[in-house]
Image (cartoon, rainbow, N blue to C red; front, side, top):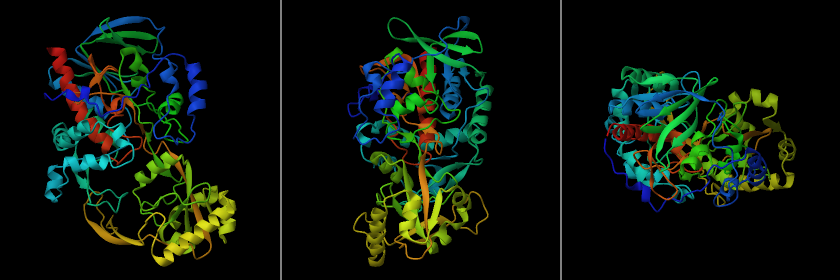
Length: 542
């Protein structure tokens, strides 16, 4: 699997020097004051505490003595989809491979569908979306071109169908494709490639682990990577780990960092995700090994400043992907075209520093679209109702005059069937799953007309509280910069010998400050996991 490694000199990618230094205490003061979870109104993240040499310590458990030494060709850190894919690819390349995981079992995976183009499943449906069109879709958002390596994105898109074939060949049960139910208005309509099991561990990790073991890959669980070891020339030669009170030094010819992102570290979320307000740690997630080790090995870091997150009602209230309601911010003012794709709306919210908004409905529309989801929210107060807009404003804790004017203006747009403020259409045809089709995986969809400009006319009126939930899509964007072989690129643009990174440890240049579409991360993980594993094996066995 030989590929072009020329992306190391790509000039269009902005290098972010958010490199790890020393001093947890300094970060607690500097980063919390600079970023905290406050709104990010700047075009790009400000210079961070890390740029001044103040960030969390680059390694942990450094006092544990290395009592065991293991020599091997390739070590892979992490048992996520990218790590297992890389391990299999490296083993098939003839390398002796050891996979390390700090958990006592396989890492969590929250997704089951993959963004891809050109697969046999899609060709059967007559879909002709090109890799170039997929890349354009990934980069249609503001500021994306200042961070994204579009050549690497194109590489992933071009090899996405190949990734699907590879998964099938390696024991993953891919059953076909399904339409994205969260985006009924996608034009042209596209599909996800979908696994048979919606549990990501069962769908991907278990069959891939079984294949890896069949190929002789060794797994060591409850083993935490603590420090990347390099020689005087900067070439990576090993990895220090801790398992209980035992320290092990792995002497390696190639090291693949697939250790996940930084969602388990509140300090790193403040520092590297300023665009995601109300940032909270993801339970059980990685704590930023790739970011913390970057400075020790001289790796370049790309940190767009966000996470994989979106807005939800914490009590399961109606999320309104179609945008049939009126959305207002904490000032009682409308802030977006509600009909935009829900991840687009999230990105706009991040840029505006919005941590919370309210979705408003009158009783007629609420009963039609949201009533079945509202009981718990009405009891807890995350959904409020009132007989007047003024009373509703008080329950929402927003400015009464501002909300009253917003509703009056919006009702006028609805009556005129014209939204001069944000351009939301009065009606729009969209695709939805056929509710009468009993099959779980089926492309049968029906066209439905959505009325999008709906006045708040009939009391009582309802407001659903929507907050950014970083646990909704548990992932982060930001890590070591790499080329398409997964080779880690140094700050000076050179390649760091023997070091590779994939998955959330190296996705800053592939995914922007907010997540463009479900399935994108899996597309990147499977593609670059395969190529990094092959390159690492070739390097180790040369």
